[in-house]
Length: 524
Image (cartoon, rainbow, N blue to C red; front, side, top):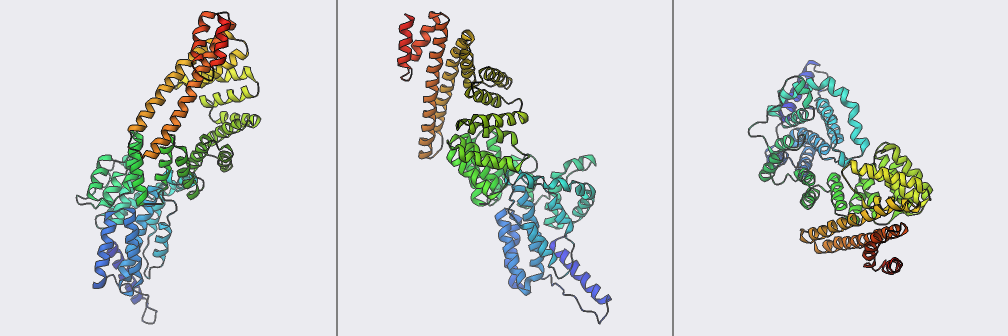
């Protein structure tokens, strides 16, 4: 049943009610569902935009319907189509995480202002049953649907029966039905029912809803965008798919396309922050995360991303302010927030506070090797050497359990050992750190080659390459320090044969050359 037919039935019902009430009763206003000829072209334009289905198309169509509804000659059909379009927009806002959208409120206001009564509660309830895309809204907004599960359980069958009857001739009902069948597929499975099949000539808006069902059907989306290029909404899902496949630059371009079409699409902006962070381009990452956090108060992923970016940019005070906000809001990402608070407190040499924070992180992330490692570093700074040794050993064990390695953990474990004059294991640990850092350097050089061959703006290549060259300098310094400290440990054991080649290796680095040469003289 189309919006036109629903309106006509409501208008007829109003006339019947008026007749039965008697001649002296006031006749209620009656909508004329037939548009004037002059409005037909505008209505056709708006209808075509709705069928196209892009969010900007729906927005444009809604504006046309609202304008026409304000004109007396077109009030009937335009008013009802404005409500339908607002409801379609409300569902799309949830699909894309457009938490700032007001389409649901607008639809309800328009429905309540109809001169004749038509019950839109089913459609409004279905909108409320659609979950928000997590990356575009706060965790509180995302979880707001949880309280509505009882309503879904009680009314699902009734909703679906109503929509099945209306869907063949009513686009709003067809979209709502396709949405329910996707989100609550388990209910269909339990009842041994099949999803409503799309008509052979289904418009793009319905094909889009089916294509973005759980997991997003890549082939269907690809074909759909070729048929309807205006559906830039799809590029959010294209971008997510590319990032999942490790194609950062491709995903970045796709997300940018989505954001250009829908400037308020915070889910795309959040992922662009992730892309920049993964590329170790921390200033742009911070900018994207900050924009999301400002637009969506309480978006924890954005707050954490901004804090981590600020941490790597060497701005610990600003990072701490953001992290304190996450802790103040509570519930989500608390372990990460306490970890990064400890990380920044340690950089500021506030090690007593850092220890409190890292202990709080451990309660929530007890098997995280980075928590163990940071606890060890803070313990070393507090001259708690035995504890530092235990923490670094636990970190290595947890890294190995994740099939990962961390050169710094081995290096600092060696430092804790030789501080306690455990020369043998300390010497072995320092020696093992040298090839570990060499491997890290090789990976950094490989990354530079990837940056230079990537489809990136020249200024961005220069910035990323410079950061990697700086990292390589640190890794070379750590190789020399590991070699020198290993040589000293072996020298203290009286093992000159093992000490000498390490000292010679350290002497090749300008920072350690003088110390290494003095050690070599002692070893002669």
